[in-house]
Structures are given as C-alpha cells and as structure tokens.
Length: 511
Image (cartoon, rainbow, N blue to C red):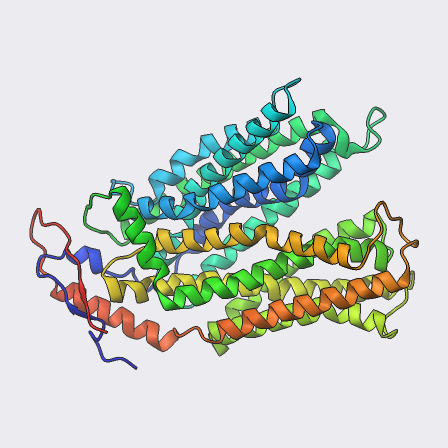
C-alpha cells in the first residue's frame, strides 16, 4: 500500500484548504436519504417513457414512420450524451450560497415538467419532416433538463459522506425510487390513461390517453425534483467547499479529460458498458420469452412487472449487507456472473426438458423466483458500480487536488446513454438471425426457432456477463485504500495555508 503523501507531494502553500477537504465520515440521516432518493422518480419516469411508450406513440398514434422515429430518438440520445460531462464539470465549478449542486437541481424542475409535456404534444397536421425535427429538438431538451438535475444530484452521494459503506446505502435509495417511478408510472399509464375504451379497444392507440399521461408524469417529475432539492437543502452546510474558480470551455474539456484518465474510473466504465448492454438485451427479449416460449397472458406479464420492483427492493438490502462483509468489488463481480446465469438457467432448462411445462401451476412461481433473483443481482451490481464511482472521487482528488464528483457521474451517464441502444440492436440482430417470424402468434412459432433463440440469447448474455465480471475484477480500490486516502486528504487539509484572494494552482503529481 502506498505511503502517505505518495501521490500528493507538492501542494501549493497558496492552495485553499477547503479545496482539498474531504466530506465528513458520517451516517446520513434517514430523512435525508429518503428526500435524496425521491428525486430519482423523475429520471425513472422519463427513462421508461422514452424506452417503452415514445416509439409507439409517434409511430402508431402520430403516424411518423418507425424508421424516422428510431432515427430521431437515436440522434437525440447521442447528442445528449455529450452534454452530460459538460454539465458535470460546470456543476463542479459552480459557487453559490446554495453550494455547487442545488442551484442546478432547483433550476431544472420546471423545465423538466414543461418539456416533458411538450414531448407528448407534437404539432397537429405537420409534415413528417417537421414532426421528426420537433421530436429531435424536444427530446434533446428533455434529456438535457433531466441531466441538469440528475448529474448534480448524483454528485451529492460522495459529498454527503465519505463513509465507504454508507455511500452504498444512499445509492440504494436512489435506485429504489428510480425504479419505483419508472415501473409505477408505466403501470398507471396502462391501467388508467391507456386502458381500453369503446372508442379505442386498444388503449395504447388513444391520443387523449397520452396527453393525460403526459400531464400526470410532468407534475410528478417536477414535484419529485423540488421535493428532493428542498429536502436535502439542510445538508448544504455540511458539504465540502471549494475555492472559486473561473471555468472556460477549454477548462471544462480538460477537466473531463482528467477524469477519464483515472484508471479505476475507466475500469468501471468498461465493465458498465458490458453490464448495461446485457441489461438491455435481457429486458428486450424477456417479453418474447414470456409470450412465445412460456405462453403467458397479459395478466401474467403485469405480475413480472411487479417482480421488477420486488427485485429492486431485495437488491437494496442485499448489496448493503453483502458489500460490508465481502467488499464492493467481489460482490459486484459475483453479481455480474449471477445475473447472466440466473437469466439463462430457466431457458436452458426448458430446452433440456427439465423445467415445468407450460400451463402447470408450478411454472409461474418458479419463473418469478428466477426473475426476482435476476433483477436482484442486476440492479445490485449497478448500485455497487455507482458506489465505487463515489470512491473514485477521493482517488482522483489525491492525484489532482480536485474534487470532480459531477464529471465522474456525468461520465457514467454518458456511458449508459451510449450503450442504451446496444441491447436493443443485439435483440433485433438475434431475432433476425434465428428467422423469428413477423406478426407471430403464441403457439405458432416453430420449436426449432425458439430453441435457436434461447441458445443464441444465453450464449451472448453469458459472454457479456462474464466480460463485465472479468473487467470489474481489475478494479484497484478497496476499503483499506479508501481509509488511507481520507487520512491523507485530512492531513493535506490541515497543512494547507490559504491566502485571501489566491487563485488555485496545479498540484504536482509524483508517480
């Protein structure tokens, strides 16, 4: 293990002591965790709306060709991904009496709601080109507005506490509320706003239903963001402070480059790329397996949606307990392996002829157990990955003298957005490769096609899962390292000599 001050050798005597201070190592009050987590309802609502309803709405209700809708959503996704690191760096360098994060959080609430409402109300009677342009512009603005909340808010995690395990607990609440918002709003939409009516027997094609959905979602998103910002406002006084700096565009880009140069962070990004691609693949094809392989009705599919929430709740408790006993890295590695194995096991057992047959009483409960455990490991690994990004903040601070929470979490969002469509692309490629019939009906798909689909899917998901695990096993930071970094940073802060009006200087690094 490195000796104290091995990485920070020549801190300028004019460096502001607050600029190198780490957060308190404390237990965050439960009420603050709840207020912090509730803001993720907005991100969950937006994410599920984009991934589940937006394509259907613009294609089947508005009448825009599916290819143009997909192109518009993809263009908005790619362009927005590059905005996140800039927002993160600007947040890191924001100085106000409300701290670095809360000005962005408060400012994002109304734009998020208004823009999400506009997204579901395109101009009536416009040409396809105009509607496509409208979709691209408004989708980018919606995603950017959400990022103005989500990136600074996520950056609060390593600022609220420097406690190694408390950070995992905080992020657990964040993911719990995020999934609750996404799945809960989706259930409300299908049960109320998009329910079948005499005029629209297929409720998903009801234009009025989407307008009512948009109003409800916009209000909930604004409320969740404001509630989170107000509820965590009391924590501002306990957050690390940094000396004022001027940030140019070049400085922003250099700050982003510095963050991506951190080896531990790059490992988390690469592992996350494999994990998120796997997550998209599994979610995209689960509906196919439930419908055509297991032969479930829509009522059973709703039960699987509720199983997602149960799995997230179990993941919250699982990672909090397991990471304290075995460490974040080891639990994250085994979560990646467990996720792909549990997702594949029922399918391979069915092909082998040793799984409960369709229509038998045991089929649904057995599959539910597998599904809940799959979600538990999948979401648990994601929570731990975000928790480890929080720990990278101090590692980077030791090497650069700067706290870049915003940039690190923005980089994570950048990765997630860039690979969001990869799982869908892989799913489409698999369905084409096995010659899955178009407009198929349950019970009519040939067994050989289903077998090829199962084998191809299982091979790919296991490959992605083990790739994520192998990369994650190389993550270099542990709890003992974290404790030593906090001690070194505290020592640096004690010996720093701030002078009034001084400008921060670059810290020399000793490799």
